[in-house]
Length: 174
Image 1 (cartoon, one colour):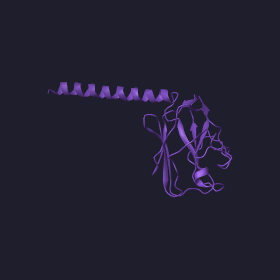
Image 2 (cartoon, helix red, strand yellow):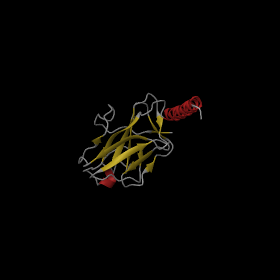
Image 3 (tube, helix red, strand yellow):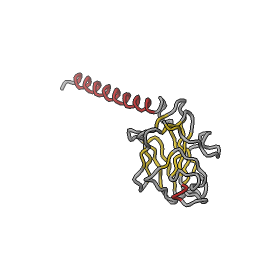
Image 4 (cartoon, rainbow, N blue to C red):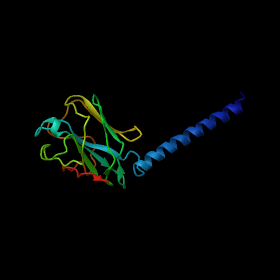
């Protein structure tokens, strides 16, 4: 193949790959209200002391975007667990924080108001990790620990809403 034809073919393939990547990024941006990377794991209660782990584990997700983000089909994964897929109807408000708890009942979970209960995850007090994946399976955020802080949440990221020490508000259910 002549050099000029090979160069033209290589350029065409590069343009096609770039357009595909832009389309994929555009779809993810629409899914997150136009803000890629805007959903983060704000905090994780790994080793509660006021109630047993199976009652008191929870995590907080924060949305930095100026618009609400629907989390239908997003998932949470941990080292040796089957994981959890967030169902339809869960939305994080614009610049807001929501809490998901292993046990969503504040009467038995240590007083945490949760937007949603999850199954399929049990955080290890020793080395473990937690990943948040969008509906396409792309990892949006993750946090790992060697030893869980006892009785206090691990502050994975500190957006102002999650870092205030207050229990984050529940999510809006559509």
